[in-house]
Structure formats: structure tokens, C-alpha cells
Image 1 (cartoon, rainbow, N blue to C red):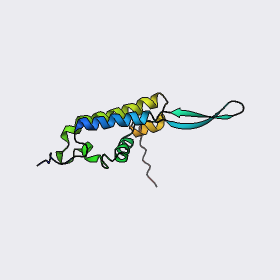
Image 2 (cartoon, rainbow, N blue to C red; image 1 turned 60 degrees about the vertical axis):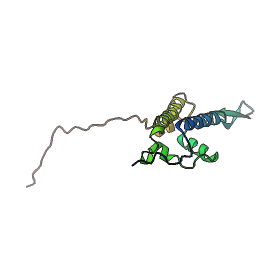
Image 3 (cartoon, rainbow, N blue to C red; image 1 turned 180 degrees about the horizontal axis):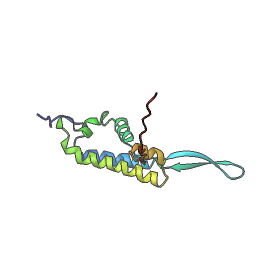
Image 4 (tube, helix red, strand yellow; image 1 turned 120 degrees about the horizontal axis):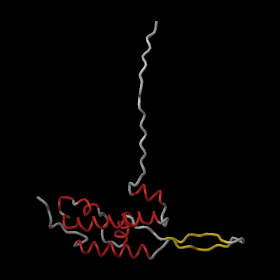
Length: 139
């Protein structure tokens, strides 16, 4: 029998969505600062580079804010105790994937890494066809 009354660190799916939105704001408002050199004199400039959304980032955000240290039960619906979280968990995974794919397509993030993280690999099929078999008998 499912234990749906298990105490949860994230009390409701709505609270999980609020926490995810807070993670998005914190992530997108905290870009990487990349040092670059420009001009003939090669003077240094700092460039901002957008930070991607990641599931690991969301987990670490929750842990750093002492909300929850293990998020797996919510996404796996352990013991069917988190069934009402499934739509929010699916939306979170989808939003992270969308951010990574679109960021890779726009060259904001490394497209090669984005493809691998999201299983977006171009597959080519190589076929070798045998048209004749020759059997030689020795004397």
C-alpha cells in the first residue's frame, strides 16, 4: 500500500514549482564571467555568458538552501507516494531540456555537450551487403 502521508520536505507540487522558478531566476541572473582579450593591444574584457538550467543545478540549489538533499523520490514517485508531483516533475525536466536544446541551437551553450546531455545524436547507418560468396576447395 502506498504511503501518501509520508512527510515531504517539499510539501506540495505547487511549492516545488515555486522552488524551480526561484532556481531559474537565480541561475539566469548569475551568468558566467568569461575573460577575453580584444583589440591589437589585446586588452582584457569580461564577457557575460548565460548559465544553462540543469537538473544537477536544481538539486544543488535545493540542497544549498536546505530544502531537500535528495530529490530522486519526487521524480521517481517512490512507493507511489509522490504521484501528485509527476506533472510538475515532468514540466521541470521538459523546461530544463528546452533551455539546453535551444541554448545549444543558438550557440549560447556548447552544442556538442547539449546534444549528448539530451541524447540528440545524429545517427548514420552503414550497410554492407554481401552479393557473392565464393567457396574454394583445396586439392
